Image (tube, rainbow, N blue to C red):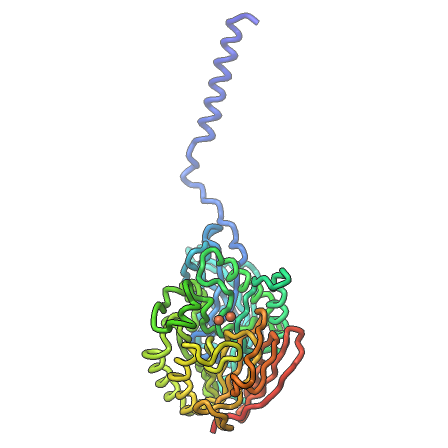
Length: 448
Ligand SMILES: [Fe+2]
Ligand SMILES: [Fe+2]
């Protein structure tokens, strides 16, 4: 090839390449519409709790991962029966500290008592004429409100100290035991679950946050009643929701270092109990659950005890008042002289005596416990039975010898939940182990 034609080919090739490059980098036509956003991905966790009357409200929480995309805090819901229209509800979103998760919270209000509902999560899109519509990911969930009066029995489960990812002595991670206990609890068709602290054993540590994710994932997969509804979780705080030297606060110096800021992850995850860390949930006119903070983010004496006194006094006509808290007043494994146990017996149990509380849920000691009915620390048929001691799925411990703890009526080294069935005149209890077997059963009459 002679030099001249070669130069011509080269110039043509350069012009063509420049034209193509210019075409690639040309701005899109001003009239083009942006590509539609992809549909929202599935929520990373979906779970229920309450902030107000469980007969007429429900609080729905779910998680998204902000690094994977944005999703509005909006859902649609309707009664499960019939084919009524979907109603829209929105709420608030807040980050879960130290993680890439957003915790979405929607409180549904004005619900009908004792009614099954469906809900589905969504995000907002601009539809025709600029009207915002909800785009859902297609998955439907179910919940049930509680009755407004005790016109039928109401059943719930109670326990504490779950610890999804604890490694047991033989090296087996006990996620299986947690899921197994959940399935045994859910099979009893409870309408809700009390969980009195030491929930995921994260200690508010960023590096352990995945244990919260595992807990909530497994809870959503396994705490499902036989009719397919999600079982709401009513938590109280324990020492393993709190960062720092929880053991020292618990056992040595109960007058220092307690602050809600030390349990920022726990408070971001659940609308109840919320700040300051203790709260009451009134079920219609028949049940009040009182969640207390046994020296984890609030001192026992002082404002919390003043609040408890007023809360019990205002509910003198409520037949069932159920306190739930973490550290036991009457421990089954640890010492009776433990600083927090002493503080609870000095401040709270006299108020239980005065109010005629029939039973209270304690945790933290990791075995099964039923005390005698106690009043001023002495056996009394009209007293309070302290039920515990937090062994949902942790490794169980040895009970104290009988001569050191004469208040104990029964102990067992067993993982368990209490299944409680409330009637107008009595509460029936069954203790259920992870195999679903009942190993204890008793009845407590309502307070006069
Ligand atoms: Fe524990
Ligand atoms: Fe504990």
